[in-house]
Image (cartoon, rainbow, N blue to C red; front, side, top):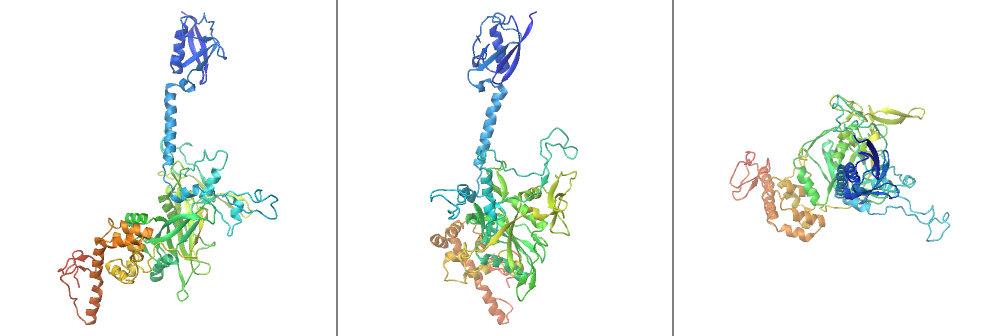
Length: 614
């Protein structure tokens, strides 16, 4: 039996030991090498020396004749590059990994980010300074440390603004991450997760097992250095006044969704402003100290109409007002540093809304990061007048709310409570830092948790020169205010149209609540045919508005308004005469006074509610 020898073969991929014998031919040995390295015979060359001398070719000479002994090292060089030397599974995995990386980059580039984000990403963003007459010693074309442009994330500059800015803008934060030597090549904005990672097979699932691979990391709450929205601006005072009218008349708290658009806020480098053009009030039950939202069957239609008008849901607003003096119109100043700015319940609600409206972001593996959705509170200020305060909750709060880890405290609205782990849910440890009486930083477990660690404040303003997206000077009733006797029906539409007959048609229909009624009413919904009118309102095009005015749908609306518009005056005349009944017209449709359903002429009972016409 031939004696077995071991030949070492070194390649760019590493070294391997090939078993052989002294009597084995070179051709047979080369086949072994090709099989071991997973390549073809023509894909490599083997040399006895590192400097590519003494090549071993496929021939019938034995290894002993080639003077190759046990333990010798041969040197393999691929003829087609390193890729030819990869093993079969490696050669398949490399393209697959490259293709997956390529597909991932393509999917990231296909994420549709907001228009304002695309605009700010193209801006320079630097803070340019004029030449200092006392400190600068150079010519007009030179620059020095006293006049060189600053980066948008410069903290000293933000702190010296009036008033000081505690949070840089989100795009300034991105510039800070991508401003290094690598230009943000390895930047990834990771969303926090408080859930156990799935797919860990080394142990039984929770609560029977957990490991460091699947266990979520502990969270230490800290002040967020940036904010996604830097300013909230109502286009005019009328928007806020009409919203507050409900509290003034009913004494109950009210909530609404803010519809508007995101624009550039020039007071802060690369800042974003949320401009509010309208407030939609969904179905709700309000009392003096509570609010309960109800299911809104018209939510999808409202979103559709707003989108066609170029508006988006940018936030929500609610009142927390307690009257101090009815004659003076003052309210109590209840939200301050001695009580709270947002309660834990409100933080959880804000986190819910922000998770529902994430911010598209191409730097995040999930395709979204944070949210631009804002919270506005109408409450009493230090002067006992109504003030509007804007907030957002941090990304850490969004994660705690999304994964159902945060609870409110029952008797302390300023405190939240992080749930404890149970058999049904694992909750990571959450900490926050505070100073003791000696000024030392102490770490506390977030049970309970002061909600100030979760809040980001945003300046809320009104412009000096009011702006009007909806130019109507008349007031059409706001939706879902039936308890005040303000209903949206054809009686109110007829009254609205008769308020200013001389006003141009475009200005008359340029009312957000009127447009919603035309689309969502049950008698004559115009969802399929109102597109031209929405385009006219969006672009302020009077020609389009007059073209739509000539349509059959608007003619039907006018006929219905004419039918129901005269009915109340007839009823009033007969009531003054003491008559018990109202004369009916057998040739015109009539609106039920109980449910507003339009009935066919010649009937005395409503086809919808079966109540009498009188």
